[in-house]
Structures are given as structure tokens and as C-alpha cells.
Image 1 (spheres, rainbow, N blue to C red):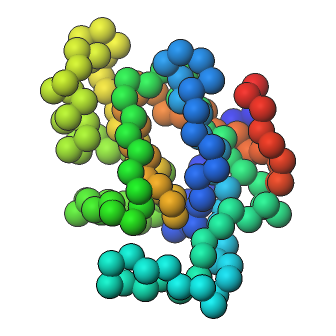
Image 2: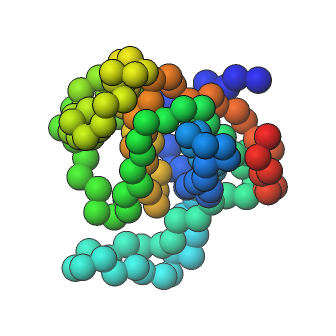
Length: 150
């Protein structure tokens, strides 16, 4: 059953990333919470207060791109937020972006599959860039389980 990606600024944690079939990409994300407030993480001179972990009591979301052209995974700690970023969702589609320019310049995919589209998924631990021709299929998964490939 199709599920709409939740709107607004949320704390998601990337639990799984894999390619269940040739050319497809599967992400599992779970709402996160801040735990262990007494522990600080030092990133350069910036101290983070608390750890961010997936909340096993909350359901997970599965996002599947059946046919991706390219994807990139970046550490959230070093990601530069684009000036034209959309704060209304953690999953954003861009019609123009440096990543889309890079994929267009380094592949001939558009000649074969048509117009390329770019999605950016921002999680608390990673930012994932995906270029494909179609949006992901999104499904709600039950809380606290392991999620076999369907």
C-alpha cells in the first residue's frame, strides 16, 4: 500500500540502505530520538549534546526506487545545505541541483530513460541523493522489526 512521506522537519535515522535487485535502491528510515543526554560527541570544536538513535517503538518507512540512475550517501555531519533547500519536508525533489548536473554530465542516462529527477533525503546520520526518473515507492513498516526484502 502506498504511503505519503510525512511533511515537516522530522528526525529520521537511516537504518538500512541496499540494492535488493539490480538497479533498484531500498532505504529503511525510522523516526529518531535523542538519548543519553549526558554524552557529548565532539566534531571539531563543536560539541553535540546527546546521541541520536532510531526509536524502535516507532514504525519505519521503506523507500524504494525501482530504477535509479545514481545515488550518493554523505555524512550528515559534513553536508552543506543548499540555499534553495525546502524546509517543509525531509524528502525533497529538486528540478535543478549540482548533483543532477553532475549525473547529467557524467552519464548518458537521459538519452535512454528520459528526464532525470533528483531526490534528497535528509536523515540525522546521512543525507542520500538519488537520481531517477520516478519518485520512490513508500511503505509504512511495523515498529521494531527486521525488514526482509519484499
